[in-house]
Length: 109
Image 1 (tube, rainbow, N blue to C red):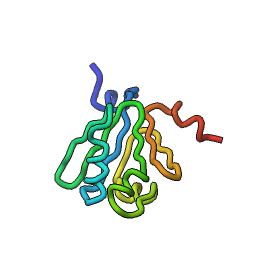
Image 2 (image 1 turned 180 degrees about the vertical axis):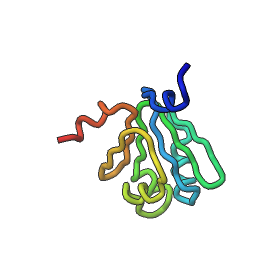
Image 3 (image 1 turned 90 degrees about the vertical axis):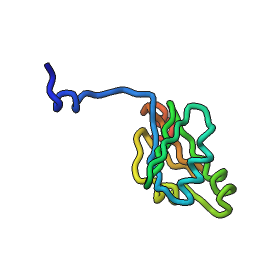
Image 4 (image 1 turned 60 degrees about the horizontal axis):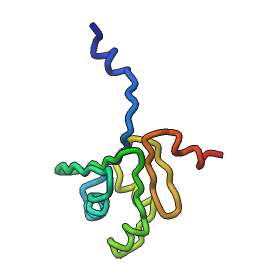
């Protein structure tokens, strides 16, 4: 019989990635923009919003800027995000999360 500690140390491979956003104007807007995208699930809590996706999540900061009516860049996204899981890549106009490390290979020198 395995103990809790044994189970806690098991590696689980998953095809999921995601972020936890602050429950703010920006966080609410990002969640709303992502809500109907394929493979994305949104779970709302009183102080935060979970945005989870399958394989890859792309947060297009141009789309967010347009909906928000002001500049929104990947660094602002990072401020609104409290945590994430998956491999995160910051581009000039997007924040991309991959469930699998292989998705980030093209960004590594």
